[in-house]
Image (cartoon, rainbow, N blue to C red; front, side):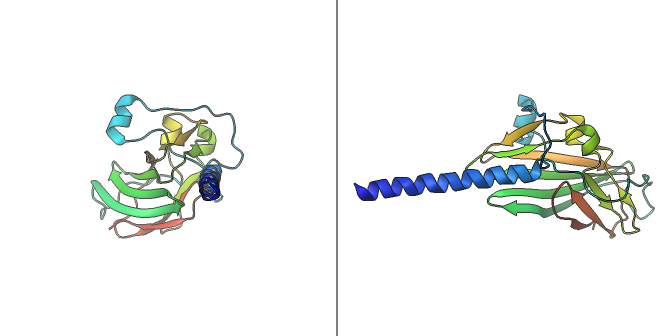
Length: 202
């Protein structure tokens, strides 16, 4: 009888710890103070196509200079191309964010990211207002120019809203920047509150 109670208490303790981890992960991504959000959902068609259950999570505005002007593709840069990157942006307690690919077309750079919840509890995340979202991420080119996105999933879908990524689910996110880095050159990506990531298009 005593062993049965001890086992039950241990299970409850583990579940509570996982819930705390999931909550802290969501708080980190939610911008530490953004408020006034509702619960967004994707259409059944979008969910079936992408496997997504909501929009991207976000953080507080990134510090740094204002956005630089957009640039036309260089002669070395193909008119349209997709680069498979698969770079880890964040990974903790089963919660991961991955920079999946970069698409270059029409003089613009689109970065595609995936949020995955591999933990047994929901991952609370959120989008800031459209105004804040436009200054929350940026890329810094090799020539020192800082460029912020002209559009993101949050600004075009449901700004200033929050949701949870269910256990075992994923969310597709993206941002479009009005500039194209030269092929072979590197740039730094700051994605909301996550650490800066060095990216190279090969």
